[in-house]
Length: 161
Image (tube, rainbow, N blue to C red; front, side, top):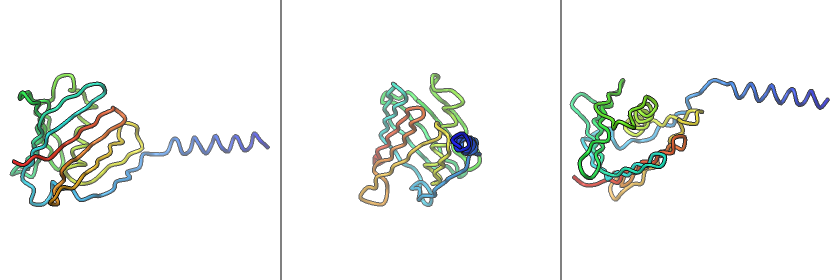
């Protein structure tokens, strides 16, 4: 009888463990849609054991794309992306970060942030948490993106232009 219960438990675990990945998206109201034009953020980026700080500029372009540039304090560009509704273009990505997995993570995270749809997939590397602190006006004073799978944390503090 015990072996029957054990067999049933093993079958149940294997069935649930091998299930297909489901999109558990949760919509939220992105501050980057509507009449948004551009925003400047003081940025802190921690990946694994590495820390980079600087400034991120997010600008909506005429062709409904978003141009996202992160440079450190002395002006060295860390990344320069263009996010289109249907595609993602890497204009520049700092050499050690130029890996397919990092490009996919940046695309997914910025797509979630800009277009306001949080993707929550059952995959260790795809668990990105986005927290937004509202400022005095409806605009966020601080945005935090955290991906525990690659130990990446990005904090964006809004600055006035």
